[in-house]
Length: 590
Image 1 (spheres, rainbow, N blue to C red):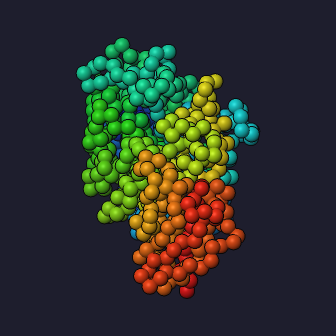
Image 2 (cartoon, helix red, strand yellow):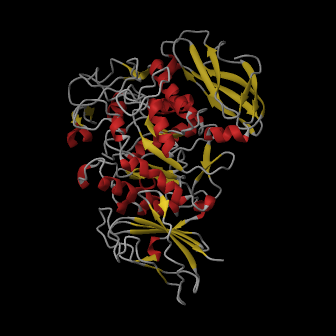
Image 3 (tube, rainbow, N blue to C red):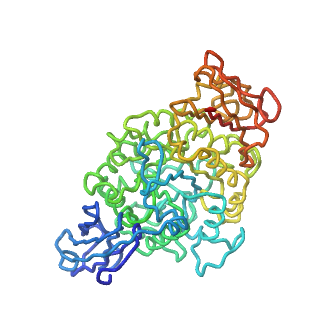
């Protein structure tokens, strides 16, 4: 690094160090860090091994001014310890910040704890898509950046441009798939007694594991592994492959350049059985989490210690929670305040506890099981915990997945289910945002198979309709951050079956009840809103979630009666029962 270089706030500043000794396994044998000081900041930032005798520490400036660092290592190494340096940080102009939201700083909870905002206070409503293997060849980062229309030649950059035009600002990524090697045999996991069991997704009929290497053929860890008889299936997780991780670095950097703030989970839960049986658990896994977090700690992203989408009890949630807590105990939270959550089977609150039990957790999620509207009450449960933490639905119903509902993938009916997931989740307390997904997109499918390829799924109507919800929820500016989920205020609110997306209504309102946002699934009867100020008059506006537009002709100005009950107007499709889904905004007239 040049002497006292000039950088912008929130840019990655990389400090490169070279060890004076050669170590048998520098990944396990050496710990490196810098003590960083700057305006309003003083703390330790850990680094990582990046091949050979090279170690790196990535830092960023959270405020303009002069920044200084000094390196340390364990064991003491003349090449790694006692090095000093600094840099000057400048703030971005407002115009530059408008060009790229990442320049507004890392994401953090709002003051009331229920939503997200940037470090400069600008609201950040997360709207993500799910491309779990975005760091692999399945979403190629090919250079030069020669734009392509949707099709087999499409690159990661093309896909980001496509979603950016629609209004997305985040991508959900799993950093590594060390158990997903395609050796021509069905994917297997190792149980506690050493026997092989099939993965749940194989039992569901999705076939053998898929290749998950980067564009140059690099896997995240080296082979052969330590699992007897499966050395070519499960790698040696004490031997990371720096070349793969540099590819992931480039992927995250590319997303930031396009203004996307990715949610990066370090691994999927099906690595746990072999990891625990054949490696030093939990220390080995703690080391791995810290390795990934150290590589990404200066990037604008959200982090996770595990993708726990299925609680199969082979590695129970308390084991993962213990490992994640040890990361915090030994190294502290991400030094620059990146939010940490976990995609969960059901509710992260129910699996791991609140922030007292899960000391690593700064925002909650629901996901995967179940993927119907009866799951949304878990968001409301998370919303009302003290101290408050932001929450979102990270794995809702995906277009074409799961197959239980059986609408044709990419159809209008599949899009309706996706709309029910996003509006129902947000108004149930998921004010941090929402993460969309679709069959073909989430596994990055590029194979010639019955399953849709990802560039085909990218164009489905549901994906284009998701950002409309952000237009609805933010129609009164920052006021959405003060909403309280209150579906019971709508009578009736639950006339449909629990495991469906039909017949339920949702409501979120401000404490003063001067703003109410409502959503009605298909099959909802015309309803009454109770508990309003007696005699209060409201401006009512219908919103079409399919087109993302407000209806020109409003339903009038309904008023609450003397008991505070307001009869809602007929649905725009003219019936007493909704034949499709609708959203409604009620604002009190002053």
